[in-house]
Image (cartoon, rainbow, N blue to C red; front, top):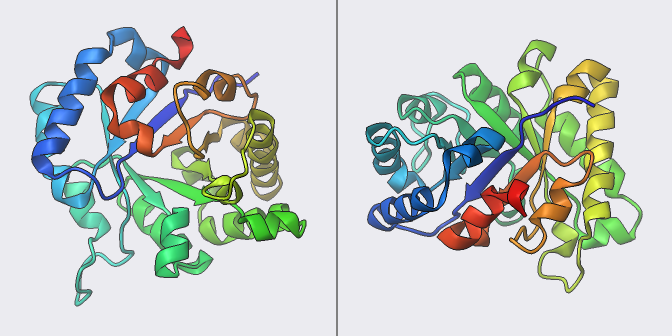
Length: 258
């Protein structure tokens, strides 16, 4: 079995001003031991307005945390009111950028072409994209889940060269189980993460697919992280609400001890 370093990412969404963000990272760091960082790569993705504060904290306290951003625009500069460029994020030592999150696809109309542009821009600026894919309940019930996810993968990875795939992380979001009353079980996560890995193997090769890290991003909590991480094709988690609670997120980061 290929040894892939798990990656746990806290996506704070539109929560925490810069002061609250500093406090949250400090509280998290107090709860983690060095061996927790050795077991997994740990990343926090605060809002844009807190990135500089968290970058300063991470560097000043020499914290072994990665810095992530929740979104990006694909141009380096220009008349794009309200957007943030990959060059701006790179200047803040951002390591990971979330691309194509289900909320941005649904609320802001981002399509697969948009997401692919973002992925390529992130890679061009020596950062690592977290490409989010996932099907809705309607698509799943219509038997379209695999086709939808494959289209999202094809669009998001368009133009990405084989040599760049080592910097790509895929996050599977079961949109069908978010706010619908349906529950995604670990076997559901493992099945789709396996399909994702298989498709990447078909497009690139088996070695690249074997090294690819595939996260799960559907209501990850302390109660289910261990069972998710037991899955053969799940290499980490994209954590939403639970990442805002330092106790919960620390427990998730310590999944290997559960």
